[in-house]
Length: 214
Ligand SMILES: Cc1cc(-c2n[nH]c(CCNC(=O)c3cc(-c4ccc(F)cc4)cc(O)c3O)n2)ccn1
Ligand SMILES: [Mg+2]
Image 1 (cartoon, rainbow, N blue to C red):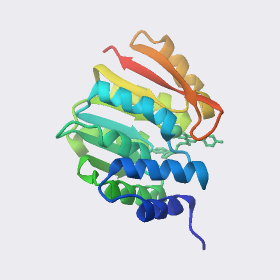
Image 2: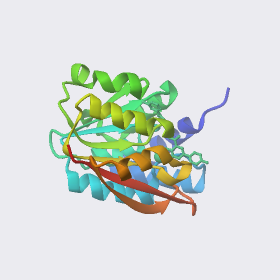
Image 3: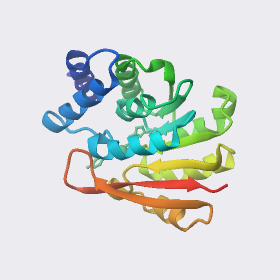
């Protein structure tokens, strides 16, 4: 019973990153994924686009769908204003266990609430579980066939407000065609594509930024 890739990624963080320094955790993971083992973090190139949009929105309440090892959770949480918080949903308990330790190593655990379970079950519970009114920012990075149903679920649960920004990873690779078609054709969204590459590769991918118009 050897280690898993997320466990090896965590070991690299605990060995090489400075505790309490989110930037060094980010850099260590990027180095591990580029030079040791590829992993499905949003990565450094798309990560800079994520950073710029999070900084522009300056969210008090952010939602992340798909924690994986916590790389993008750290990217988002390190940029939150004082009192800001990021709720992140992870389906896979093994991923969640690694993510909790990566987030703790970065020292930003007080800004993050990691919840385990399928997004479709958890989204309707956001208000009662976490006292959330609406989200200012949503990062979609989970199962690609859940982007569209979960965007609709967020609307139906009244968790989006006029101006909420949805940012979706992987809209080209692996691809989210139904989601793209919806946000690009719905009168309720203003959508824009940020061309980039699949993390740590030369393959095209990109982020879709969609502003909910209410
Ligand atoms: C709450 C909840 C959470 C989840 C959930 N949690 N964690 C995930 C992971 C999802 N992410 C991916 O699958 C993904 C895949 C690739 C990829 C893989 C192989 C290739 F060859 C090329 C590209 C690249 C990426 O950037 C990705 O993000 N889902 C699911 C359900 N409910
Ligand atoms: Mg992704």
